[in-house]
Image (cartoon, rainbow, N blue to C red; front, top):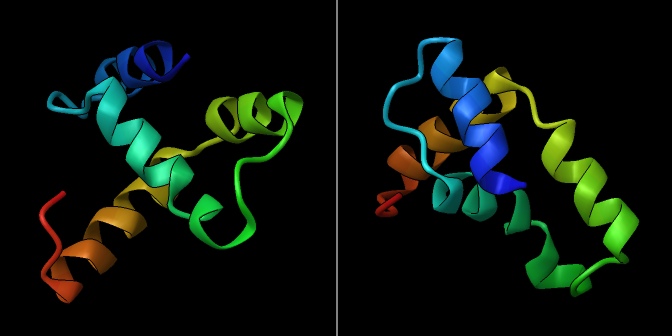
Length: 67
């Protein structure tokens, strides 16, 4: 699923997005609440918007995280 979403982003012009990048972005919320049910996990991946992903990268850069 993450690879599929990364391919979608590449079609939109985000050339260097990988499935791992998508997973890191989506799973950042699961550290506090734990792994969700499968249907919520699938929904979180497929409903991720490019703008949300870019916000995640920007915040990670400000925090000095290696993303």
